[in-house]
Image (cartoon, rainbow, N blue to C red; front, side, top):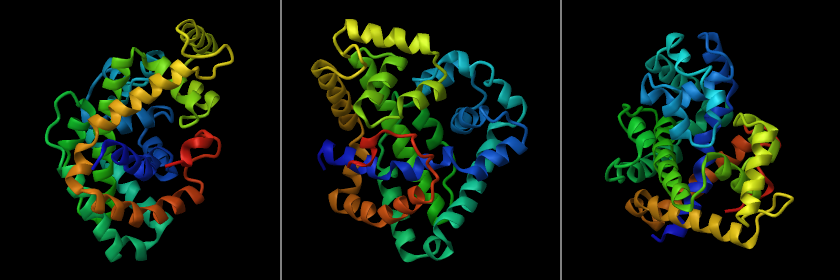
Length: 288
């Protein structure tokens, strides 16, 4: 399988992984456990890393302002342990999948097949060198229910790709805020104001980074990508795809196409039920 096809496959399936950050079941359960609402994302995603501090979370997540993370991590671990948080995530995912797709889908032969295909891809990852977030998730026990196997496998693939994406951004000379701004400018990322607020950046910090990128001739004065900016973002995606091809190569083109075919109706159902808040992603996010 070529890297571009692998990249399209990852993007087609990624929302099935990322829905966990928007599920009311997960948010409500973690808040009920005592976590501040804003801490749920950081503690939930970082839990496999263990009792790490704000610096590790900021480094591995890459485009958040450390000033946003520091009041929340590591304080979250004194409220709920990483193991407790992961147990909540999988339990609430189970409930949410049933609500969103129905038990007939979850117990279907199609779901079992999709879980098998995704697990072949995820288990095809040969190692964790330079992939800290992937490595943390890879040390978790695999679930047994097919829909949770599917989610776990897609999460392993997502974090493997994400770790490689950070390497690509470093290669391109884009820090976390610059990466966020230029990705938003492509139309595939978050909407600008959602991205700025959700990632904890002030208007002054955002505008200062835009000015710096404009000085580097990567952005125009109104925040659009220049041709050099577009070329740099294309380079980042090409490197990311190259670094993330292994699991999909292990599955093969036919297997990957079959997995996308099986999962696309579920993805569309999840999106159609408003799990992902309107206005979060730019208009190009639905392109494959």
